[in-house]
Picture 1 (cartoon, rainbow, N blue to C red):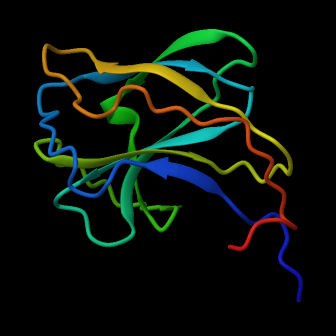
Picture 2: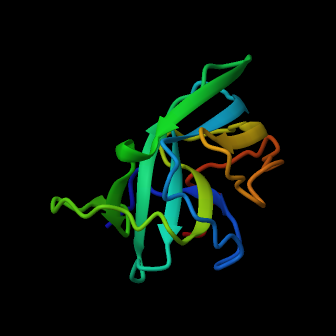
Length: 145
């Protein structure tokens, strides 16, 4: 048996390092320099069980800085990456983890840089700014997943 189209690479805040209240937030805004590939933005609240994240997909344009608006309502509950078909709303009062993951099943290098992450209310997402990944070569033959 041979694994086909496997692997992923992501960056996440340390567990419980945010403890951010997003209860009155409508959306997140991210200023990104992308490469045209598909990425997943993940949020995890304290109420989540192991393997659960609220996720949405983004595809920043290649080679130019762009500002993306991610409505909180667009984040779907997933369990180990599989969408939960039951509608379970995110407990936005205690968001404890933020992450970015590439997971598009395309072999090769990728590049995603973030200049800013903010929200559409007066609250601040402490610890979400300055997330930046450098150009990294990743291929299925190199990954150890």
